Amino acid sequence: MLFLGVALLLACTGETERAQPQSSPSPNPMPVITVTNTPSPLSHQELRRGLRIWLPPQFDPNSEQQTARLLSDRLQAFYEQFPNLPIEVRLKAEEGPGGMLEALTAASEAAPLALPDLVLLPRELVAPLAQQGILHSLDGYVQLSEDQKWYPYARQLVTVENMPFGIPFIGDVLLLAYPQNIASELPLDWNDWLISRYTLGFPAADPRATVMLALYLQAGGSLRNAQGRPILEENVLTELLDNLSYAHRQGKFPAWVIQAETDQPVLQALTEGKIDSGYLWGSSYLKGNSQTWRATAGFLAKKTSLTLADGWIWACTTPIPDQIGISFQLASFLSEAQFMSSFTQTGGYLPTRADAFFTWEQNQIVKDLDTISNLAQVIPPSSLSDPLGIALRNAALAVIKDRIPPQQAANDAIASLNKP
Image 1 (tube, rainbow, N blue to C red):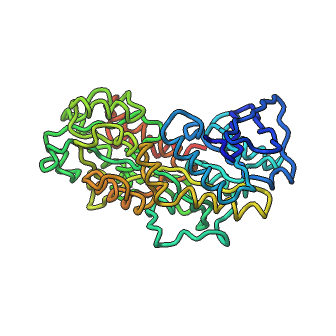
Image 2: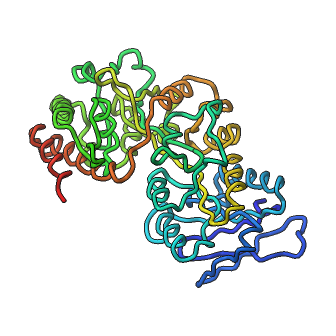
Image 3: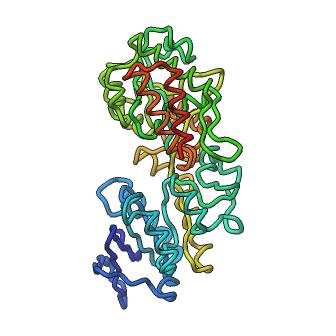
């Protein structure tokens, strides 16, 4: 089905797979794939004949997932509009040796013609690739107009130094989930929750410390100084850690939080009714008992309600000027509201635009997710979030696991950021 007019090529890290030209298409053409150990870059003429797309493996349009059929059909629909542009898809890992960042950087330096026309990038790779000049700006090609109802965090996903470098595709938001049967009882103010009887689960050992970062931001903390270096404010962090220490002493955290590196133990505990509330990513929330849960952006802290978001964007890296416009046209086609609505609902992701919820069942879940998405801001770039995540995780574990006084844990976290 993928190859009804679309020359679809799947190549994993370390391999190149090239579709062989056919003199005339058959009624039901099958893929002809050649795997070579020493790939050679496509020529200028070959690149101009079609569009090359790089996708992370979880978005493989040839997999058995329902979203694969949706994506392949969408690519086929675009090809039918431009039958002189066969579409070639390759799979690239998001990180690690041979992954997106390494492959795009290497190709831009040694073999620019090997760069894809369109690539689906996770949020953390957008800034480094844009700063290297590998990504093309949207300016002059596409406008992310206001009537498209993009969520604020979606615009942040594609923006680097006030310039848009792609089109938002799908997102994810951090949220606080709890059963509907306690929705009228669970206090959503942080201070009120501390003196309540309700328990909370979160991944305290998360290397990115996303929950801690969200709580710190909700308390009004700053992330960078005047020079752009990562910082943690001592008074804000100390108060946050003091609250964590108090909650731990009151037995409000289950014992497993100090081992949890992802939200999966939180999801399991919520599903089994072992905790009253827990921080989850929206994608995990949708895979759980979301029909019997409610969700919010988190406990209010100093009347500030916000949360953090992640996501993927379509970006253009082609070195051929004539390919840029059509590449962004395909990106827009893949981010259109109706397709995004079906893709996210089927795949358990969140739309990056409010008008893409329209095929979802209009219930309390959608209302909650829409509200949370409007309150979300994108996770800071890796240059900030990586060192801050390590410092915040270590501080949280210090007060919960090792019973270190909050003031000392805060000072240690701040000192770790100042090390050369």
